[in-house]
Image (cartoon, rainbow, N blue to C red; front, side, top):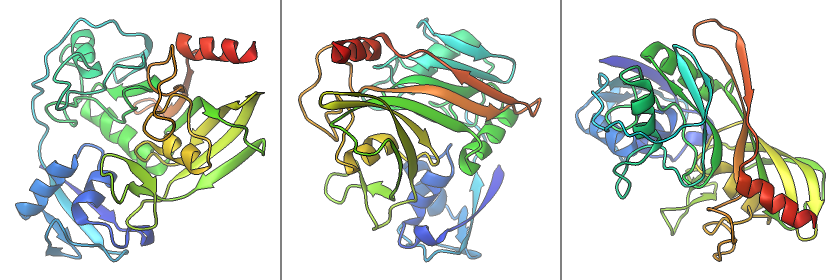
Length: 304
């Protein structure tokens, strides 16, 4: 049983305790956080609290985390595009359409199943039964680089880098419309949509700080090719922020036009770059991967 200590920030004011834990501790889902709270394993300012407790900001939140559970996901021989691999980490170029980990509606055929087949038993157990080794996630219909840890020490180090923003992620996207400036920053908190709980939205009510830096790479008639760098890593962050600017990502049927784009699986968003400090050597590792075939085909079509 491990223990973690977190300090609620000013922007956490009004956020539910279970939601706060799920956001700040990557290996915890919201339901898992709620179970910890209900069993008295979480304290706020030294006292146990209900999962519905709303934070004021500034409190010390301490939680006893359960020991890693053995994985129950099954290995499956699914091809992987491995960009980097050693004894501690593996980085793959995930295709659009591949779910990262098993979940209701997607019990198998996921990246986790593929990693279990490729890596055998050498994956961190911190992610629990269904997310072994998974440090961060990218959406099912987003393609590109994702990193997984092969041992618990690497997982903890990479999770810490994710929290302090030293694990850097760069994306490219095609957005609808023409951005007036050549570059900019969206600094707008993201939380659950107030009416559609399956969506995220820019909101001041319980939202968490979110910062996306963007720059224009190429302009077309009615579309713009952009590069985005995440300073934070909220759910659907780039998709929400670009839609907030009035320029949703092409093919995003959740935050943009509901009609899918022919030839695209989901949104035209690709995790093109990843930089992290190697958990064992302490050296910087910087990786990139080419755009997906569908992304490249869309660019060629727009250029014509």
